[in-house]
Image (tube, rainbow, N blue to C red; front, top):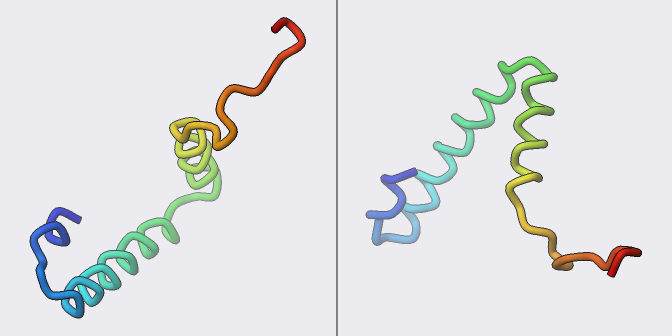
Length: 59
């Protein structure tokens, strides 16, 4: 991914991006399903809620 930061040409950027994306997909395909679920849960936990803090009955 670091390589993408230094590419100035749009066409070359998308070529490199596609190659790297396919490499990541191939890695994920080889993982057991439980590991994939674990990765998705970590990603969701790291994302902030799009609605901000939801009101609770205590507020």
